[in-house]
Length: 395
Ligand SMILES: Cc1cc2nc3c(=O)[nH]c(=O)nc-3n(C[C@H](O)[C@H](O)[C@H](O)COP(=O)(O)OP(=O)(O)OC[C@H]3O[C@@H](n4cnc5c(N)ncnc54)[C@H](O)[C@@H]3O)c2cc1C
Image (tube, rainbow, N blue to C red):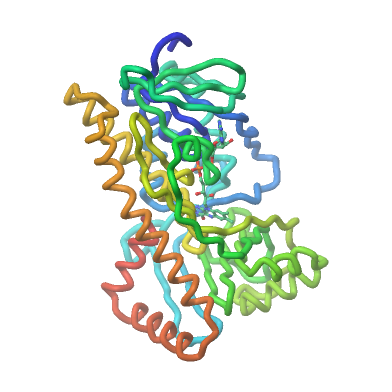
């Protein structure tokens, strides 16, 4: 695609969601411009497992398979989890999901963000239908005089035009702000501490989650036998845990996890991420759409953020393709509204469900603890309910 052409779609942000959408649209025959402020660092097998990992649900894996990058990801480093175990520090009852009950070989896979980004990026670089502008940062966006294109001003002084602009520029989306799209926010006043840890007993290809008063703790299995942890705690507690020496941190982590995998034998350095919920009030504007974290940021306790973002990408590519097949304007208001209707309520329901779970499970009030224990036991005993939650968890 030449630099003077008007792109069908200009995507801002080549994180996992923007990159997947760019590739999907290009593979369907759209001419795509992709603007990214910095190229992803290349993933190398000899490097230590990156601290940022995601639990990919079946729906995300299906997308990566269709984009023809999954085989390379899986053969590089992807850890299947075949079971999930969820339990509560203050209440009896536990939930157990097994892939075998669903007739599946895995519930999902744990993969480094960096690996997904880097393989999508390589595929993008090879694709003739994608014009890559990197490093470049979007600083302004305007609907053009006739209303049939939108332009983007880049920080290198150049401009781009497209029939549709998609913001995939993450939680602090510059484009969402430029378009004046309001968000509903909730600061959890929590941080998610991440690290990779070695433990005494094998992780059994299981994703473990323990609810504690005011905290959640997840252990996600890695291919080398260690687990990747996400420990969501209040800001002050996070500051305290981050300041601990390794031995004390390992002892506290082991206790918080109820020594389910024995003692914690070793840990990498720790990193922490501020946690919030942020939901865009609108997903579309004239010749404009939001996807991924630019549209919705959710609590990581259910490990669904990028899975929801990938579903946005699939839905948006689908409605644009339908419009094109009908020879209609790909970015008409009706087309964009169809995308918004299909994704905004699903994302809002998921965000509020994770919000309710984190408030309900975070509570140490005795009656709330007893209710959630009863709830866990109920779901655990009733097979159709258990299967319903297993399917939701697996996307
Ligand atoms: C602790 C933690 C654990 C998590 N675990 C999971 C999990 O297990 N499963 C899961 O599904 N999700 C998980 N998530 C959420 C997941 O990481 C995010 O949902 C996902 O990374 C969002 O991807 P994205 O592509 O939408 O945005 P981003 O990854 O933020 O990408 C945005 C891109 O836009 C670029 N950009 C920004 N501004 C501009 C600009 N002005 N011009 C040009 N480019 C720009 C950036 O450089 C970046 O590359 C977790 C999150 C946290 C914090």
